[in-house]
Image 1 (cartoon, rainbow, N blue to C red):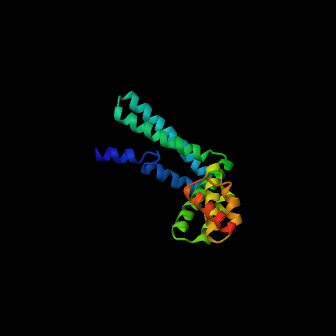
Image 2: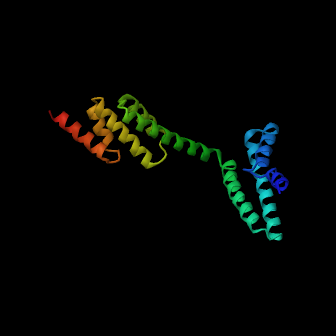
Image 3: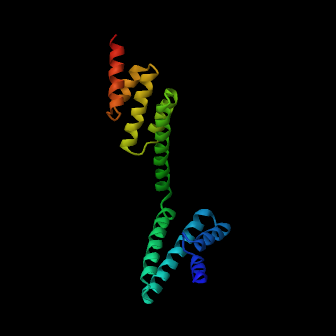
Length: 178
């Protein structure tokens, strides 16, 4: 039985060892993007072959394994064959999320200049309305704490109206009134 599982593990199906080995070999022969596409196709074909064999042999457990791996491979194929623009968009959106996490840390540590910097960067690379609102929230809070009250009030118009933004706006208006 161990020998059979060892051979099974060497099938060129990702995420098994054979799939990883196949990907490594293809990466040595082809450019990375092409190697990924070829590897995904080989892996999907092998998954279909394994599923077909499992159906013929009435191996229920193997049918589930084959279809599970096929789902994983179709997700990989979606990435491998995605248009470059779509991939770049996903990376930019992800960059905004990374900046959001950095901004949260900066806010917790009261590093207002860093928070403003992350807010500006996040505003520039935000892909969604929610990301833009969170960027303006950072900018509102940062500007309030760095005594840029007019800027904070302007940013607050575009920010999510969280308690922190409402408090910052009230503080700015109060200070500007005096």
